[in-house]
Image (tube, rainbow, N blue to C red; front, side, top):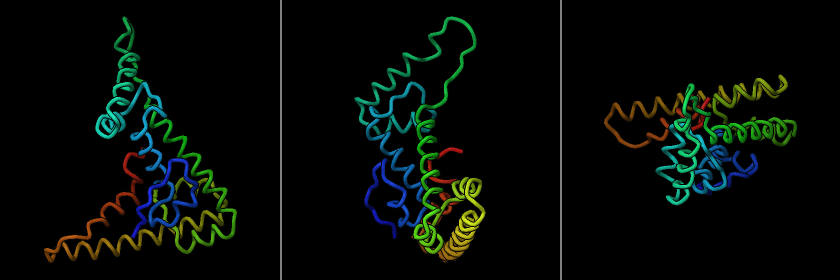
Length: 193
């Protein structure tokens, strides 16, 4: 079972390891939640569909008004001629920068024996971040990530088979495995590729 203690967006990677899910996804979710809870700390003049709707539904209204006003003021509709070009999402850019920092932190930590040993024994990582780590880690550490991914997948396949059997018997509950599988195969919700 995962601890329910909330992480801050600035939390170090080591704090996210023991949660039984991808630590990079966990920290990105905390960072993204920080955007929704305190959008004044993350100015934006352009948002993607996911982030605009999240701002509208999860942020303090007074702060959402300010960001949406800024977006309307910066809107390309104000142009009098030429092609209207949309800008990339400011929050996706910030999220990607945070992701790069956490991947670099993971890479640095893999050089420490105690970290590598712990990750080898208990670690979890999603397929998306695992593939990114494999590309940048030396082969010995990349092999650790491959083993973690294989172990995680085998565990999820077992949990899915158990859940499937329960569903076929008409039992309810235990559907959290579907969310764990979704995170494993495509990373945390809102983390785009």
